Length: 246
Image (cartoon, rainbow, N blue to C red; front, side, top):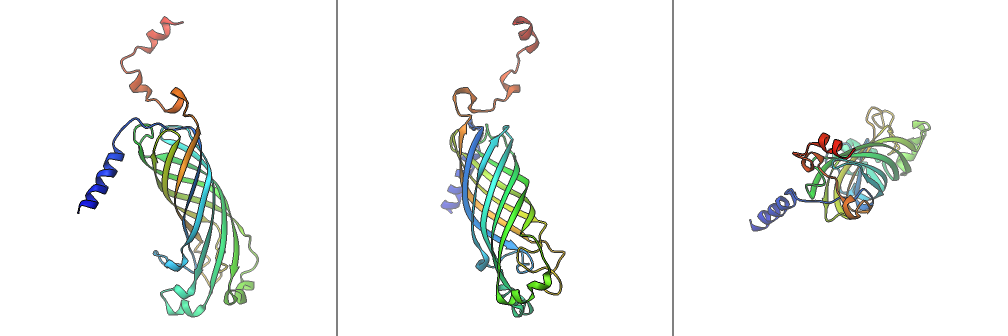
């Protein structure tokens, strides 16, 4: 019982209001696991055998205490196989694939609590990007791939997710996030048309990662935090002050 209590206590202490400082422009790097959902993996809980790696990197602009913009590059490995399907009919089909995906996206981040008051800040993120899939299919899939017709390895993607940012100090922060990449493609796995697949079910990719953020701008002297102007000038007659120094 002592370990759970200690863990909860640490989280509560991190979430207490404080004087957190945030930079304005930084770079980030993260790593984690990636897995796909589509015609070859339709269950909510994906088979452990289909889990693989992912890396994330990019730029982050902290525009406001609650808003940020992120240019994100994501690369990873996705795979699926009928051998792990719960239904015998799917296992008998014998399809499998592996693909390396690359995505470049522009995302907005909304912090649920102000980053300059709380060191621990949960956030929501969403954006739009382009995804490239380098597909490799097995022999069973290849025998029917010609029936799918021609399709592009590029697709529009819409990353949507949640995250948690902990500001260690002004230049450094760590984060953890889970992002689902919606795509307009049903060919990340090489299977789409009936009876081989479901053309109404678009393929998607999960990206769960942890990383570090380094703010190289905005941490000099007084410019390293976003001030609460209402609190800072509380009780001050600004109009009188302006008239005095005209």
